[in-house]
Image (cartoon, rainbow, N blue to C red; front, side, top):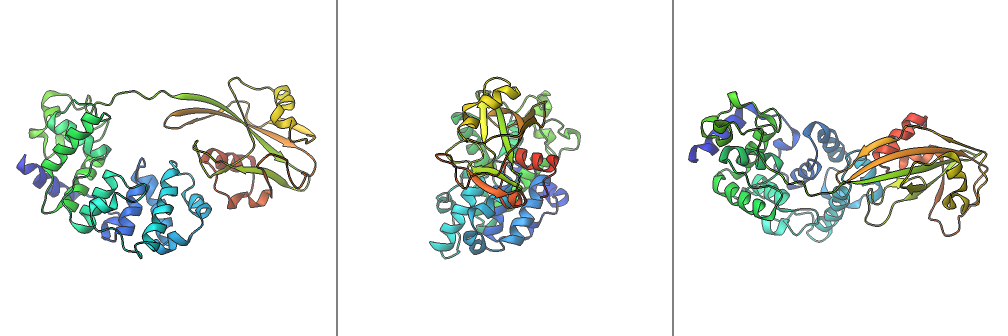
Length: 355
């Protein structure tokens, strides 16, 4: 497979997309792009990359920002732990490393949120270190070209694929090659519609020769999806205030804000909301309670399937403080300054809050 890297590099030179992070070797910008593009398509991630570079042009700017500001800018991109880790590591680089990113793969991996893939990408692109990247695109290309039927989401599979990726790496131009194989997987060797007839390595591709391109790569299904029913209580007072809370703990949407929540296993009716202990404990006197969306909103996460209803509760002026409840009273016009999950943002727009 000596010619594999040459054909891939030649394909990349002609077919690569013009993307802003390909015009630089600044490790801050490469790191930013790689973190944003984890679990995210380029078309979706590009506007976020541009917003972050404009808002935080250097690692010092990002380090000095408040976490809430970073989460707000990240809003809608999902997998919010990426944003929290990004902010945390920016402070480490700015304060402990004086703004200079670690200069090799091994040291880069010590940054929070930087795993094998991200460290390999930064080290090869910025420092020309010969380390192979291994992401979803690379798994797919290697699996098909080499005919590897080992599940990619097992410890054994990851070990073998990493070894094969290192064997095929262009050690003279590792940064270019790594970008080439990732781009090839994204543009040519696509998951469902690979363009095999125009593929420059089809004559060496085991999957193409055996008609198995749609069977590879293999991934074991071992994650059980959890079903959850969420009922959000959207309080609207006479003086245009509402109640929000910050999500804490290790669950979904950590550190983002949402409305008071009742989680149940069954569908709730209006009478269930009125009598629910969580509402009664607030000692508010609702004037009206109406359901905003009778048909639950379905929202799919990696390991969870959510069904969400919003209940509009109009009431009197809220007390200044709620005992034993971590709630904030804010003016409705201030909602736009808080980072919220995409389902909350969509509701706010649908209901007519001015954001």
